[in-house]
Length: 499
Image (cartoon, helix red, strand yellow):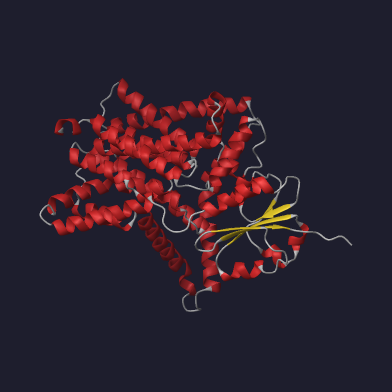
């Protein structure tokens, strides 16, 4: 048995089985598709039928994910929801397997490798969004594949296998970029890592050319293709990337200065206003660090810090350089996003979290060795890890079952070709109505504009402000759905009077 557990097939087999189980659990517990997922599914259906996709908000993020779903639908005829869930489940599986592969590149210790299986399978935020139909799953998978290939590449001598690995590395980052534009940022910056490897100047230049070889070929091919298809929608996407690379830094500086000016005028006193830029920078750094810790979880963050302080990662210098290059590029991208938008979604930080998690199995292994005779501390650590895992796997608190039930009811009872207003995109998706007015707030009720509609389908939060606004509607709802927090879906049929 012990010999079997030392084999890679056991390691990857167990990880694959539980990854698939976790995906099935996540999909089963999900009552309502995430809003971005609805947009990607609808865009995939539009691509499948040859319709214009410019009206979809998610088209600006890139249609590649939806194009893949549409192509699979053409070959299989499967429902788009099934395709979306299957694709993202497959990408999550790839992320799990290549995370383990990265750890195996860094150590031959079988216990650390098995701890890597445990760590990635209980990763809180990674599991929390397993059921979300988003392009990010594809990005994370090929991001980790590129890291695995880079570590493998620097361990190979000059031969055909090394050239093939370099080309595969470039291909993985190109595919990652097709899912999220950050992949192209890695494609441009990651090759510079080889210039600081502990090798001769000639070897570093050779590696730099090898890693960029596919990018050069792809760039020339793309240039020729664009000359032949000058009006293709990909032009706009490339222009967006070009503008961000050329004007990104000036835009970042302008946004930072504008925010500092508002901070000085509206928040700080006259005595501290002169330090507005320093205060803003420290605020952003604090905000960023807290966001990373929360995304990684307190337990994993403590283990990462423990690994750094104790210098537990006894990797080769070149391996340290590669891993830290991915960390620093992630920090650069995500900090700029935070500074520009004063907003940072958890999933934007997940690539960084997955990279930092590489240190966790090394820390756990050291703790297990040091605490092998301290059962109380080991029991406490086990409880903390279980708590971390359950938060991502199980759903606590209110769910959105009531939104799904309300949408299904509306699909059966609200006729087509009537004027409908709603403030909930997910509700309207399940109602199967495509002609409706949608806004995020309830302010139109105060203006009396609700009388211009035949049906109102309103999502009302449990807070007193929303409840007070809804009381201004003189009609009574024909149907009400709610959860245990008393978040409600109120459906009104407006009866118009004629003079």
